Length: 163
Ligand SMILES: C[S@@+](CC[C@H](N)C(=O)[O-])C[C@H]1O[C@@H](n2cnc3c(N)ncnc32)[C@H](O)[C@@H]1O
Image (cartoon, rainbow, N blue to C red):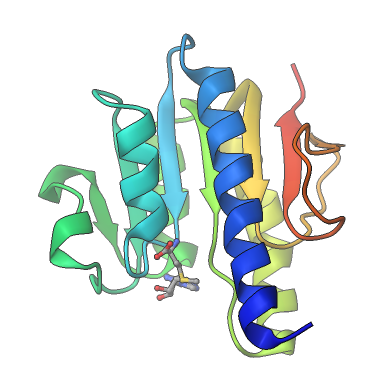
């Protein structure tokens, strides 16, 4: 498969999973967390699907496209290792949908980050919350679910916070 095909498949899987998850939580209260704002593409998709919902976006820097910038009070700048614990303290178990999209180029750095992110996310998630991730997470409080949409295996990871 060409790299272009692979990229397109990854983006289609991401959109399919986000569309499913936003439909699932549409009638439930709770915050949405976009962990890894980047260019703002998935933030923009989430806010289109969930108008009027607070969607907090986390990143170490604001590099979002001007058309995809969160309002200042939804933008949480800083290292995840500081911003997420502080947010969890202020909003414990208030998120109904968490999207972790922060893959790093460096495999070892990725592995290390996934370890402590896996521990942090359950402090943010409410019981039954949906957690989506571009990489596998490991925490017994997060139950792995097969994506209910047709995407290649291991392309996107879906979890539900224990009730
Ligand atoms: C793949 S990009 C996000 C793409 C974005 N969801 C989109 O659709 O445009 C990952 C982002 O995560 C951020 N990131 C990764 N690790 C981080 C950390 N430890 N603290 C803060 N930001 C981090 C990077 O700065 C980068 O902007």
